[in-house]
Structure formats: C-alpha cells, structure tokens
Length: 387
Image (cartoon, rainbow, N blue to C red; front, side):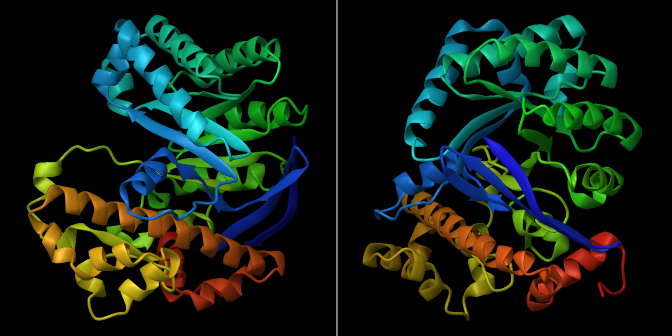
C-alpha cells in the first residue's frame, strides 16, 4: 500500500481540505470520500431494488453501550456473535479494497465499566482478538482514555505484536476532543510511525467542530502534509443547529479524508413515533448538502431526484404513497431504507464532484456554489466572511 498527498488546499482561518491517493493492489482510491457502512448494506437489503452501491472502502462502525462493553468482558457467547457478525459483513463487503471495523466503547461505557487499567487492558486484548478471529486485515485499536504516555506505550505494544502477523495492520483511534497538548503527544507518535510505512491510517473519533475546534486545527496543521489517511468516524448525519447540513460534507472542509457516518441504533423508537412520518424520515438534498424531513421537501421534485438514482417503479410507488408508512412499521422501515440508500448514492457522487474543485485548487468556488456550506463554515469558524 502507498498513501500519497496529491494537493493541500486551505484558506487561513476559513477552510481546509486535501486530496490523497491510496494505492493498493494496482488500484487507486482518492479522497475525500464517504465509506460504505454496514448500515448502508442493511438498508439496501430492505428495499425492492437491485441498485449497486459503489464501495472502495467499507466499514462496520459500532459505538458500544455500557451493557455491550460489559458483555465483551463477561460473555463468551456475545463475543462469538460479534465475530460471526464481522465475518458476515466482511464477506458482504468483499468487493471493497479496504474493509475495517471500529468497535468503540461510548464515553459512559469507559467511565462506568473500564474503570481501571487492568480492565482496559483486558478489553483491548479482547477487541483485537475479535477482529483477528473475524479475518480482518486492518485491526482498529479503540480509544480507551488512557493517559497520553500509557496510550503511546499500548500502541507500541500492539504495533509490535501485529508486525509479527503477516498482512495485518493497526489503525489507532484517538478522540478528537482530547485537549491539544495531550493530543499533540499522541499524534506525534502516530505521525512518526507512519513515515516507516508500518501504518497508513489514523482513526479519529468525531466530535462536532464547535466542540473541539482547537483540536481540529492542531490535527490539520500536524497532518496536512503527512502521507497518512485520516478516518473521521461517527460523523453526525446532519446538524440541526447548523441548518441541517450533512456532517460528512461539512467535515470534508474541516478535517477528514475518509468519512464514516454515525450508525444509529434502534433505540428511542417510541419517542421517534411521536413525530409524524413526514417529520421523521429525512432525505439528502445534494444541491444544498442538507438533510431534510419530507415535510420540508413536499413542494420540490424530491421523488424524481431519488428515483433518478434508484430507478425502480416500486421505489417510486413507495415514495408517492409515503403517508401509508405512518402506521405500518414494515412500510416505514422500507421508506427509511430508501432514504439511506439514496443518501449514500447521492453523497458518493457529490464527493466525486467536490474533488474536481479541490484538484483544480478551487475549493472556494465549490463552497460558493453551496450556499448552505458557505454559511455553516462561516458560523463554525466564527467569521463574518469566508473570503
């Protein structure tokens, strides 16, 4: 594998983005891009269409709850189920050049269950062995909130251990919200390790830009010229406080070469049902990079836009008759899946489009074309104007 920076584009205080070329098995992947997640695959299996989902890179992303984290420590059968699930997804993602999983405990799980270094070390070993048993080539190392010194020591041990297993490569994960002085020490280690060719990826656990802006700026300055692909994992589908902007398309201009959307779990269904279907189900609007509920789209040609990418009369009928999903869980499930599949396809194409501007050194022209993106970046950066 070879990772190479093709060009870096930034406007001081305003936006930052770059293009990487990842070479593997005689093929090339260019970033920024959005990965295909296991949730996208599951959505595809729910809709009545044989539409294909392009996928150079695929990922299984799971933010583990307190209960799930405890079961990894205590339950053999639970670990067996996770291994089988990862094996199944690896098989379904076999057309991708790169496949990885991220099994990351939520902050509350770390605080409530992994309460000392002994438990953290045991959990770490189990998560690594789960991925090895599932046959994954890229082994992600979760962030367990060790001190920077302990984190580096753990990363060193894992790198040396995996070096003895042919074809396996670690992806170290770091929480973006770590304060810059601590973050800098960990990233310096990873950056130096990347120059040896031992690792090619860095996993960053997403935090909204406004909550960790100093960390994002530090990371950009440290990594922008480095031949290591930055995976930003768990990116919000949309930000209601920022005009419903798509998280992956906003962070393309903050930090992130490979963007992994958050995978929502089926919690809070009862609360969600309190909203009517036209408020509950959202679709991605490519021209503005926003994710809107159907109620906001009813006066547009949104159905035509969806069926332009998913060409199936049955899908069109589902969209035209979406009110039927109000009290029918199966129809609601299909409608939601159509929205996810359409979003993946439209978003995938949009990244191709935005890369053209970055190639030409004109990301500002792309941002000007997307009014919402312009306004959101201005807000996030605290600027009155972007140019």
